[in-house]
Length: 398
Image 1 (cartoon, rainbow, N blue to C red):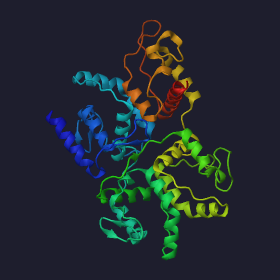
Image 2 (cartoon, rainbow, N blue to C red; image 1 turned 135 degrees about the vertical axis):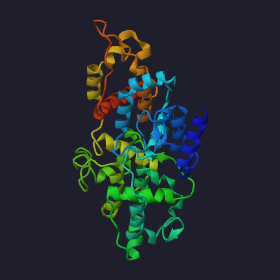
Image 3 (cartoon, helix red, strand yellow; image 1 turned 120 degrees about the horizontal axis):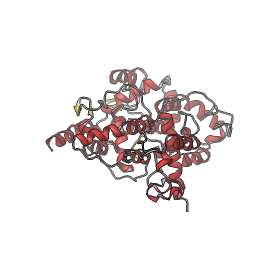
Image 4 (spheres, rainbow, N blue to C red; image 1 turned 90 degrees about the horizontal axis):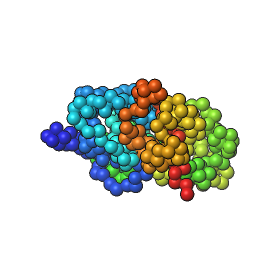
C-alpha cells in the first residue's frame, strides 16, 4: 500500500503542470493523461515498469525508450508480451487487470506525455527557437514576451500535436498578416524544431489545461466528410479524387509524423490562404476534435503511414489462428467468442483494451498440441486493428 501511495504521489508530481482530470465521453479522440497515471498505478503497471527510474525493474523503463513508436507499436508490444507478462503476474501474485476503452485511452495519453511515442524535444533548443524565430516579440511565456498575440502561459494542450495543428491552422493567416505589418520575417519550422519548441512551451506554461489532450486520431469517416465540407477537397486530392491546386495528399510519397504535419501546416498557411482567397474559399476554422477526425482520415489514405487493411486483417486472422477460437457473424456456434458480438471495438483505444483483456490460454490444435501464441509485427497489428474496428462498426448497424 505504501508503495502504491508513493507511486501515486510521484505520478501526480510528474504531471502537475497538466492540470486536473475532467469528464469526457468514452469514445472521444481525447485522453486524460493524469487519469492515465492512476491507471498506470492502480492497475499494477508500476510494479513491473518504471518511469524515469521510479517504479518496478522487471520490464523496461517506459520513460527512457528513445526509439519513436507508433500507436500500433504499443499495441503489438502489449499483445506479443501478454503471455510472459501474465505468467510473471501470476508468479508475483498480481491479478491481471482489465482495461476498458476509457482507461486504455487515458493510459496512452499518459505514455504520450512520457515521450514514449516520440523522442523528447530539447527545452534549451526550444527556448532559443522561441527567441531566435521572433515568437517572443508577439507572445508571452513565463511572464516574458510581447502582447500582440495571445499569452501562451495557459495553453497546456501544446502537449498534443493535433491541438497544435488546429491552432496553427486557425491563427496562421492572422499571424502572417500581423508579422508582415510589423516587418517580421515569418519563420519556417521543421518537425524536429517544432518538437523542441513545444518541449519549452509546455513546462513553461504555468496555468491549468484548458481542454483535452488529443493523441489518438479521431474518426476517419467523419474526417472524410469534413475534408469535403471544409472544402479541402477543392484544392487537394486524396488518391486521385479532388482538386489539383495543391498536391495529392496520397501521392506525396512522404510519410509525416503528426508534428511534421503541424509544421507543414504552419509553413504553408500563407500560400494556402492566398490560393483559397483567389478561389473565393473562406479559410475554415477547425476545432481540435475536427482536426483529430481529419488526421484519422489522412491516416486512412496513407498520408501518415501505411494504414491497416481489412482484407489483410482477414488473411492474418486465418493465418495466425484467430478464427480457430473466434467466430464471426454467428459461425462456429460460439457466441461468447464471436468477434462481431464483441463490444468496444469501434475505437483505437477500444482495440488496445480488447487485445490486453484477451485470455492467454490457447486452444489445442489437431493432434492435441497446444497452439503457439501468435505474434504480430506493427503493420500486421494495424491490419488486425482495422478488421476489429470494421467488425465493431458492423455491430452498430441495425
